[in-house]
Amino acid sequence: MDSKYTFALRKIALLRGIEDYVVLSSRELGDALEMSQQSASKRILELLDEKLIIRDLGARKQRIKLTQKGVDELKQEYSEYRRIFEVSDQITLHGVVSEGMGEGGYYICQVGYMTQFEEKLGFRPFEGTLNIIVDREDAGKLDLIRSAPGETIYGFTQEGRTFGRAIAHKAKIRNIDCAIVMPDRSHYENVIEIVCQYHLRRTLSIGNGDRVEIKVKV
Amino acid sequence: MDSKYTFALRKIALLRGIEDYVVLSSRELGDALEMSQQSASKRILELLDEKLIIRDLGARKQRIKLTQKGVDELKQEYSEYRRIFEVSDQITLHGVVSEGMGEGGYYICQVGYMTQFEEKLGFRPFEGTLNIIVDREDAGKLDLIRSAPGETIYGFTQEGRTFGRAIAHKAKIRNIDCAIVMPDRSHYENVIEIVCQYHLRRTLSIGNGDRVEIKVKV
DNA sequence: ATTACTATGTCACGAGTAT
DNA sequence: TATACTCGTGACATAGTAA
Image 1 (cartoon, chains in turn brown, orange, yellow, green):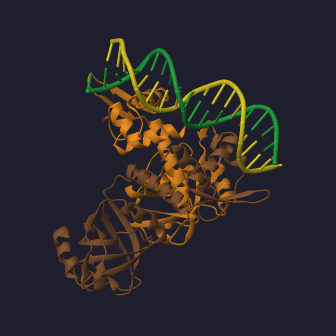
Image 2: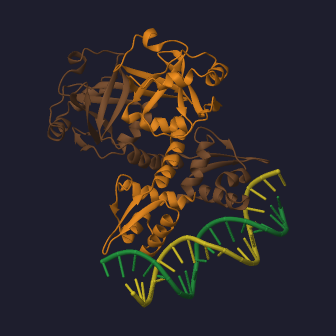
Image 3: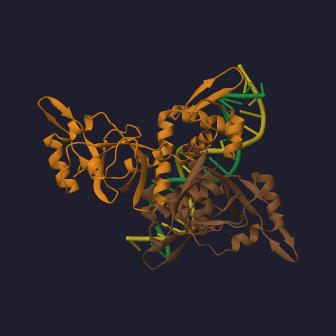
């Protein structure tokens, strides 16, 4: 990706062009990018061509908004910066214990997953997962974790049913070894599932609504 | 600052060129930047010219390292990304209460400061500051706070002595209004000073070594 | 006021090559 | 092997201007 494009995208994003359309004339963008109105206009056309932004060209003023592709492009650069400046090899997530839908438990019990967990994480998980709703302010850390390699848990098919690929990241909760398991496809959710050798609710005496801290290795 | 320069700086930083010299041939940099060896060589000369990197040109291999100016340039872009993706209007700092040197208390008692605090923060500070050693993982948040406007507390001269300018950022500690006060010149320290209407150690029953959370408005 | 086309000038890129 | 020079080509920025 050309750095000229992300530079322009970043300036548009700073004007809140991620959440919604933002009124932005080519002159204003030119001022922000320290270039002429003509060049800014051309840059906008290029960004449109690359499908990094979409535009609502009204009679008098155009309104601009980043596409998902544009947002993803910026998130990738943001991840690079985090890798540069957050040198620590662990990321601390804060959140609260949630009921969850019990689904995770059903999935991880599948022998196709279990053997991989034992092999790649070094423990055989308790047959259930602990769901954590991660604090809004830590949502960015989830992207950072998603961009880390982790342990790949391969998918498989059993009795005609498909079980998808997942990525496990080794972690600790109150100094107990565990792992957070994320579906392969980025979900952009703020709920994570934790697998652990022990029954965490009982072992740590925690229940729904309790605040917890998870240290994820990256 | 040209986006081409920060793009190159970022790639060098990802190779750990912030902490120490990194062996990096012009061909390798060219590969990382998706450009020719010749252009990468030219880019290196430009970065040297702008004093964004320094180089140790050995007989066979050159070693490259970012200068402070180069690091600052990247930090500024990083702050922009944080402003984009950490949309919350408050930043939560974690840290532990520290003894401090008692200096802060002497400074803020000066009437030249006190009147400004009353006017700009809406309370008359208790005559002393609470020092917090901010967790290493939250160090980046301090940069983000420094890049926010805050309330400027002007310097003055009294009895031949100069009292410098400072920036106050409104904050809350356990839901009590307070403010963190930072010297104008970036110190890159991880200790912050908190001023508050009340004697925080007594009001909150906290002492040296206790963990606290401060929510700073930005 | 806008956006964006065309013409023109500048400079960035890379091939070839010297060191 | 390296780095980095010269130089031809073209991509990119801007001025002028149309719509």
